[in-house]
Amino acid sequence: VKASLRRTLALRFAATMAVGLLLATGAFYWSASRALQESISPAALRGDLVLVLAAIVVAGTAATLMGAWHFTSSAVRPVAEITAQATGIEAGTLDQRLVAHADTEEYAGLVAVLNRMLERLERGFAAQRRLTADVSHELRTPLTALRGEIEVALRAPRSQREYEHVLRSGLEEIERLSELSEDLLLVTRAEARLLSLQRVATDVGDLVTDALATLRKQLEEREISVTRSFDRDPETVAVDPQLVRRMIDHLLENAMHHTPGGGTIGVELQPLHPAGVRVAVENTGPAIAAEHLPHLFEPFYRTDPARTRGGGPGLGLALVAAIAHLHGGVARVSSGSGRNTRFEVDLPTPHGN
Ligand SMILES: Nc1ncnc2c1ncn2[C@@H]1O[C@H](COP(=O)(O)OP(=O)(O)O)[C@@H](O)[C@H]1O
Ligand SMILES: [Mg+2]
Image (cartoon, rainbow, N blue to C red; front, side):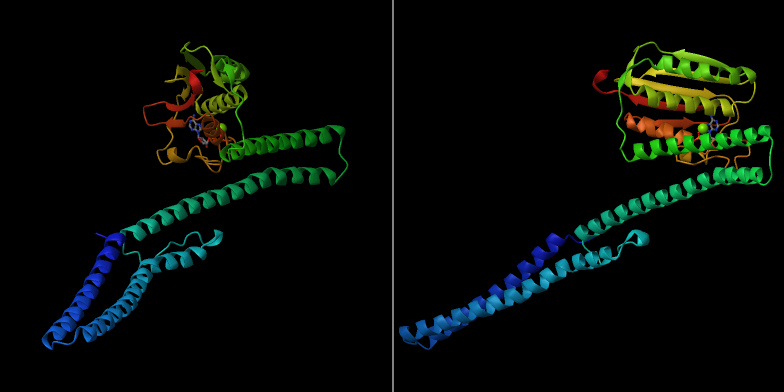
């Protein structure tokens, strides 16, 4: 058990005072009894007493000063140590931890709190660094492809058709790049809370219907059937329709991408208590390995980093989580053998709208 700083200081101070008072009382007793024994004249006795008392005051003050100085410096020494160590920690050395001699409860608590803060900062910085590296990587790949195609096309005269082909595939790369930068902007602005929601009364069921309509052809081609279960209460909820539509698009695209041909996608809307809506999208198909589940909503996280089966850059679910957070809600995933992969997003609404 760590000693309490307050108790230690109080006890030491009381002990010093006790010793001082004992000495003072002793000196006083000694001089008074000597004076009585030797029957000194009252005038001489008074002079002696004044001298003894003055000596006690001077010596006592000096002793108290020294004692207090010693105690307080031992009490604040860890503060100086913590300050010196904390001063040395910068963005590049966030892996350092404070190791001050914190042998009292109060300082041990302070050091622990500061170290936990450093840990959170370190994790945040690492995530930022990873994000920057991922962004650079994602930008480089399409740019390299674009450049290669243009260089090859310029090497010799080409037919109109060939130029058209190059321009078309170039345009595709550019579209992918702008989609990437838009998604990225949304994710980072949402994380930094730079985005404000435009909540309006929205029929989320309509948003799902529209989103499914744009995917109908692809769903039919792969013979994927869709089941819907919309709880019609409440009819509309105050959410940001544009963002929620993007969220639904991403969830449905993912479900479609991972459902084997002939599989099923289920979409559910449920009222949330006390107010809001829960959007759930689930699909048949192979389960997501448990080790991936905690990371799925991180930007650029993919279960298949090589992207052997196509797929996006890994921003879709980060966007879903960001949109959920903006609404004050959460996004969850569950998956396992014998179960459908299910994504659930809670979109609560304030004031019971
Ligand atoms: N319905 C799903 N079934 C299985 N895996 C999924 C599903 N939805 C997402 N995933 C996995 O989660 C990862 C992240 O998804 P996402 O953020 O949308 O990125 P992207 O679709 O761009 O790869 C993907 O790599 C994918 O493998
Ligand atoms: Mg996706």
